[in-house]
Amino acid sequence: MLLILIITPILGAIILSLLTNTRGYDFLVRRLALLASVIVWILCSILCIRYINDLDGSNYKFIITLGSFTRIGDFTLGLDGLGLVFVLLIRYLIPISILSTWTNVTHNIHTHLISILILESILIAVFSSLDLITFYVTFESVLIPLFLIIGLHGSTSGRIRASMLLFIYTLLGSFCLLLAIIRLQVLTGTTDMFLLNIEGPLISAGNQRIIWLGIFLSIAVKSPLAPFYMWLFRAHSESSTAGSILLAGIVLKLAIYAYLRILIPILPDACEYFRPLALTLAAITLIHASLSTFRATDSKGFIAMSSVAHMSIIIIGLASGTVNGLQGAILLGVAHGLVSPALFIIAGTVMYERYHSRTIRYYRGLGSFMPSMKSWFFLASIASMAVPGSLNWVGELLCISGSFEVAPVAGIICSTSVLLGAIYTIWFFNQISGGEPSPYLALTNDLTTREWSMLVYLLVPTFILGIIPSSITNITTYSIMLLT
Image (tube, rainbow, N blue to C red):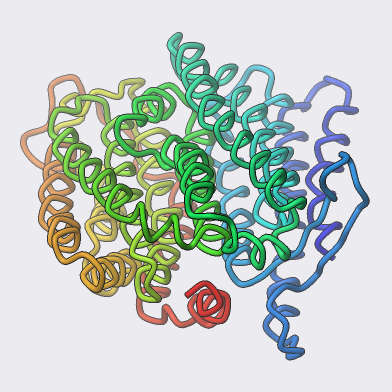
């Protein structure tokens, strides 16, 4: 079942590549790509039901080994509660990423859609990897389709620079990850995560710390943490809406998964030793990113910096190593994966497609003649600032609670996110929706059915899951208990 799930998007990409460019070609390939993503959506739902109903007591399910592709590792895949949550998030966001560029990507549309489908397949493989070599290969492979999505279909001429920054920064972090994996293999003789969960904690403290630093540097780039987050601002600003949705909604979550899957179970002593370092970097990132939002003039750049602030809260929850912190990190990761794409749809699809500007002050008073957009923008904003009743609130509360258990100072700094997040989000909302309408704005239609449907699809579950977060925690609790 898991193998079929991974192969399905690839088959869809192959079919798209074989089609001949004739009349109605663009509309056909869009519909076929959307159909492939819907099939994956259905398969993921069946997989989730089977996982929940399987009462054999084991943590990992759907394990498959496709044989050795190197001398030191096997291509092994499987899912536990942690991986399943992120796979479900992938299948939820891919159809939206395709719909978001239904009209604004007009050149090389087949390349764009093929890249999205291949990225979906690779991401599912990353979150189901049970071998470090498999994880590294799939982790690195994400760069290729993402580079094409941003570099070929970005919104301005700066897209090439943005894609190069993404490539260089991520490649630097991945190089450190590769060295750490090689060191682990030399010390233990294996890259199998099952065996490393047993043998990894037995590694000497000095070696654990060296390996931890290499892996954490990769996580710091992917999260990203200060001072490695400038690539994210450029990537979001220049990317198409689909690229921003995939980057913020899914790709950044690779850092969460790597922390949960590699650092905590395999290098527990090093995690304890370097906890102050991780908490300090995350706290600095939180404050700096939050204050930087007030200097933003680019709407997508603003959302990108707010994403950095949210990801730093997640890292604080992960670094705490407590049950509350880990659960909060996963919940906030899912919440960010829903709310941030909704904000990017408003900024990149609703506003940019109408006025072709990303300047925040350009849109002053837009809500006065787009009331439906203003309503959904308001819901996305209050969810982003973590009001009670939203999934963001539950996630932030647990992250702050977890950090207070081990480092009260970090908890106090983390709690400032409640105030800072409210201030910059309200400022952003008022700059666009409030005030006298800008003289540069012409009257335009309100939300289309497609835009309205995408926002409903993303924001309604944010509040439903905020009321019943147990629908996620029931899946992840057993896996988290094994980590702590």
